[in-house]
Image (cartoon, rainbow, N blue to C red; front, side):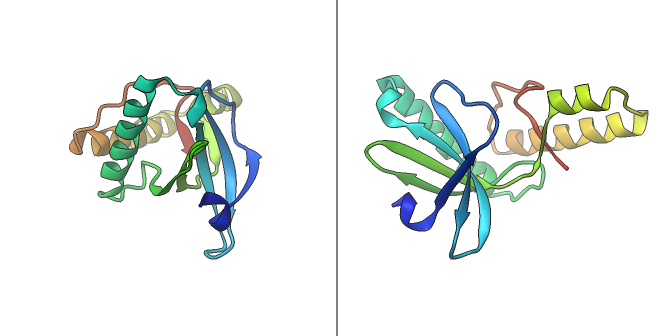
Length: 142
């Protein structure tokens, strides 16, 4: 079970309708991870198929080991929740970064767009389409 390997810590970002994101500590590896926790009782029967597709896509993307896409490390399922353990990336949501920085040089904008497109290309190379690509859904590493 998830709780034998990980200690769930503080929430990360804003909770979504069906999922919450948390920091989690693995005492064995002595590393911190990001965890997407989906409460199974809140899922509509159609959502289970979508969750399986998401897990499959994350596993597929992991195969190419790309530093522009967060990696799925492990999946735990119990009767109450599914836990997607992912690589921890410290950073800001793109929207927050844009508001905070206010002004970008041409070089900074070019690098940000290049990194974004490298991540999208990596997904497309694995036949995965990103359906919610938006400035409030993209995390930029520090």
